[in-house]
Amino acid sequence: MIPHDANALAAQGTRLTMVIFSDYSQIMERINVSEFKATCLRLLDRVRETGQPIEILKNGKSLAIVQPPPVGKGKAAFGAMKASLFTGPLGDVMTPLDESHWEVLRKR
Image (cartoon, rainbow, N blue to C red):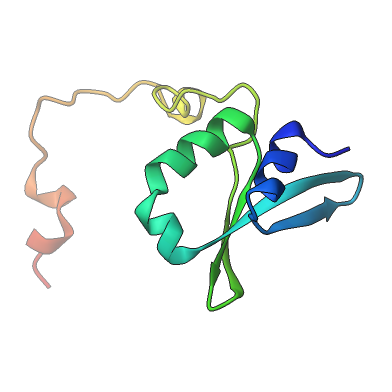
């Protein structure tokens, strides 16, 4: 199955590559790194919108593959480690420690 976008790209002379990951296959556009540099933001938006990756070439060799992030529920960064923090009794945190608690101040 070829996405409708792939037919339009092929008609324009864009080089395409078939990528197969186990049961999953799709058409991937291939562009030179200089073209990617000139149109980077537009290409990144297109990858996000269509979900189709782009292979970036340098001197005809694969340099990188830009693909959309995985779809799914992401965990919010704020509060992600809440359950892993120790929240038990800390004792008196306002009273300064005396010299016996500081190893650097102990006399040898």
